[in-house]
Length: 315
Image (cartoon, rainbow, N blue to C red; front, side, top):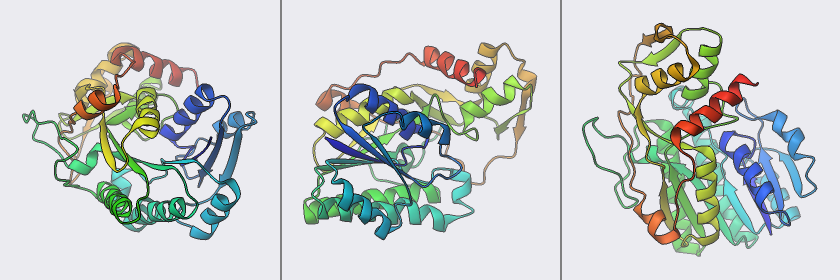
């Protein structure tokens, strides 16, 4: 089997690459990555030690480049992690987000169909559903209407809708996963958990938007990788699967929890002006992936936080 991982040097992509190389010893893996600020270039040197690994620097929005790779490598499966993901940046540079997240996905689907790829898996986000009131206990199901609140989420919705349409019209085998917030090793330093840890290590102020009561549901990145692998191999064509380990936490409580773990004072916390549009709460129902595919997460939240803190301490 030969698999293409796009955005394979990003946070989740790096973790999935390590997961794949460790689990599938006889298979071949190809990474495409544009090497933006979010790429982990150090891990590329580690991956190059694997004979089953090949790397191409390039942009999935560049159709000519992408077709050269498809023509040469002849993939069995494609997993698309490649995406612009920063909500704040999406308000300042919408064009880049739609170019990568929508046009790039269209290019992948077109070439997967042309070169007879067995399955294209699209890594999406729970942000496509929009948000909930803080006291709302609803959990979004895969069949719920989508209501994106920022350009990033809107671009992911449009990519999903194109893939479902392409599946129905052309029969391309497509699966989609919508995951909650990931954390773990190799995450970019501008994301909440590594930002808190790194600033605490240096006794720097830790900014928290608004009153800090916004709720995010967290999953350790290797549990997400396990879910993607399961969907890729056993998921039903044309279906969407929510992925979560059901660890909802207010931002302020999560920050305090990490500071307590690190034996740092809460006086490092500084409340800053809230985003103009800031989703209040995310929550998804994972009954589908649990019943249909037997998915269960492996990592205890507190233990996973400990692993993550130790990783950033050791860098």
